[in-house]
Each structure stands twice: as structure tokens, then as C-alpha cells.
Length: 158
Image: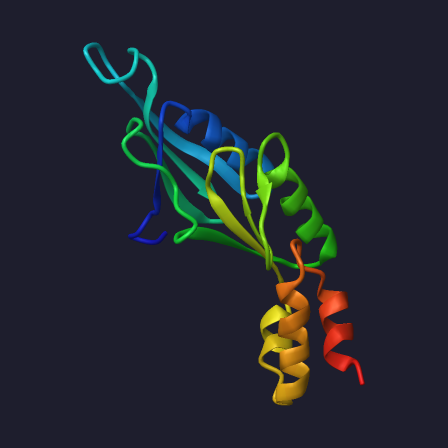
């Protein structure tokens, strides 16, 4: 297990967010929940820190209050093995209040930014033929959810 765990700041819904994230990955679990006691910024019993794992990576979700919000400058990147996985993660993360962005980026309903990346994208974008790579990049810039087959087709256009 890594010594470093990203900690996501929430305003009262850390436990709900962690539960949601754990529900969408096959290898995921809540590891520990510590709770606020009396005379705290949140009602006694509210989760203070939720430790959870997604695909073997440890995360923390902190109910810290309204002082900070999530920024797209820090996002979680998902490597999807195929189009079905891209669709799964994309659809679940944008559901119920999430927002689609460009180039595979999105924000979930908690405001956390993600990028859903199909395996093979890097190979297409780093094609040794700069014309092919440029066409793929231009196609990607027009997409919201990434479509690897469409990117391959764009790279191959004559």
C-alpha cells in the first residue's frame, strides 16, 4: 500500500461520497470511519474522516466544512480497459448532478473532477507520425466522453 493517500475535502457529505465511489469500482471498500464527537463543527456522529480504497489505491474523505471546494486542477484519472468500462464509469459519475466536460473530463455530483481514459489513448496521441497524432488530438478536443474507435479512425483519415 502506498504511503500517500489523496484526501478529498467535503462539507458534510464525505461518507456519502466515499460510499458512492466504493459502489462503482469492483475492487473497493470502506476501510475506516472516524466520527465527530460533541462540540464539533458537525453534529456528533457525523463522519470526520472516511478512509476507503478504490482499485487498490487508498483515499481519505474529510468532512472539513465549507472553507474549501474541489478544483479541476486536481482530478482522479480512471484507466478504462474497454469502451464498456468507459461507458460504465462515465455514466455513473455524471448521473444525478454530475457534469460532462471535454476530453474525457467530468465532475461528479460531489464536485470531484475525474478523467475517464480508455487504454490505448496514449499510443494514439503519441503516434510517431505527427499528422496522425495531430488528427487524433483534434478529434479528442471535440469529444466529451472519449471514443477510442473514433480517435483511431480520425488518426487514419486520409
